[in-house]
Every structure is written in C-alpha cells, then in structure tokens.
Length: 290
Image (cartoon, rainbow, N blue to C red; front, side, top):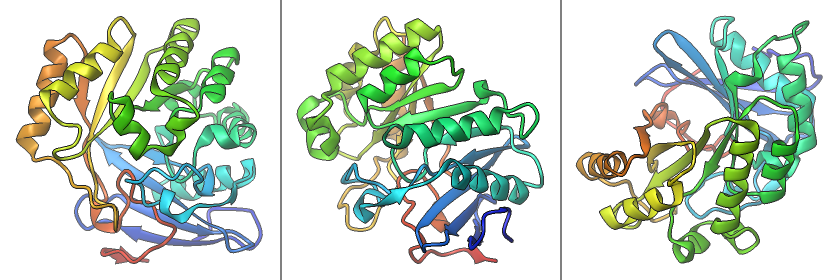
C-alpha cells in the first residue's frame, strides 16, 4: 500500500494480534523513516502521526529519542501519513494526535501546514477540535499555539512533578524547566478557553507513589486540565518498568480525590511496538506484517 502521492515513499504495515492496532512504517525518498499508528476504540479510529524522523529531545524512556534526529518531516509528508492511516482504518478517521516520532513544536511550521491541509473543508475536512498536539515542554511552541487562531488541543508530557527527576528523564528540562512549561500551558488554556491535557507516564518505583500523585495534583490545581495516565511501555535498554495495575489505580484514585480529572489510557499495540514511547523507526517487532 502507498496511501501517498509523494514519489519514492515506501510503506510497511503491521497489525497487532492483541487489539487490531495498525502501525505503518514510512520510508521517504531519502530513506528517512517515520512511523504512524492507527488505534481503534468503540468503532472509531484515532490516528497518531509523526512530525519528525527520529527526535532530538533524547528522553531516556523513549525509543524514538534513542535514534536522535534524522530530519524534520514536510507538511506533505505528515499529510501523506494521514492518507495511508485513513486507508488502513477503512477510509475513516475520527481524530488525529501529533504524538508519534519527533517533537511537533520543533517543526512547528510544517506541523501547522499539515493541520491547515487536514482541516481544509475542501480537502480532508477533519475538525481542528479533533486534533491534539503533544509536546515534551517546548515553551516557545506552546506560546505560539496560544497566540494562533488554531482550534487544536494541547497535550503536555509532564512525566513527573519532581523537577530534579524530570531533569534526569527529560533533557529538554534544562532548557525549559517544568515550572515554566506549566505556566505557559496554563496561559495557553486560559487564553484559548480550552482544556489542557497533561500526559503522565507511570514508572514503577520512580514516580508512582501517593506523594508523587500529590505533587502532580498541586501542579494541576486551579487549571482546566485532564490528566492522562500511561503505564510505561518498555523501550529497549531504558532499564525502566511499568508499575503494577493496583499501584497505577491507587495513583489515579489519589488524583481524583484531590479534584483532578484523571483517566488511565488504554494500552494498544504493545506487541508490535506501537504503544507510547515505542516507535523506533522499524525495529524488530512481533505481530503480523503485511
């Protein structure tokens, strides 16, 4: 399958035997790889797109970060991913998340161009309100979104409320400390009158205690936000692991008791390395290949 009018693009499809999640590996004309994921829930398909080939952020828990940055993807290459994903989803896609390989705000002009094309009523006609841009905390990008007329949602990868620990896990924290990230996200939400999504990856024995939950609740206090909890999906060589289900559930309950909207994100595609943090540009995986 190609799903793209761009010349020289190769697409390889893998399907999860566990839940039907589809992962597409793209190799563009110069050989640069990127991966996209199609997730299914309650009869609807959500598409996760990459904004870069590889990533320069270097988060220690992320397989993409271990690759380094190959290059930015063009707006056309981002849209080409959507075209192939929509085809893999049977011709329909309900929502789009820019949560694949790369940091969207480090390639913002091309991501903006893709958003414009995908939301064009004469083209794909996907409402911007069904699109979400995820960032590890690039403050200028959050501010650019706040100043724009885009209707897309903002998701911020908090990872942990402990500034010191976050600095060890997320090298970008040295440039954009968590306090500045959260302040920018809060301003963005208030200015645009939109809920901000806080993504929180749970690592077993590292950031999953009730004290950690209290720290996250303090960060979220007074902010129109929703916390999405994600049990870590192991990336090769990270040395990190997910907490057990009971610990993760207790963490969620603590947040909710503190008045924070918190949901446990459903894991999909782990058997084909398509879950959060596992995209590695076509590394070996199990599952059905087409």
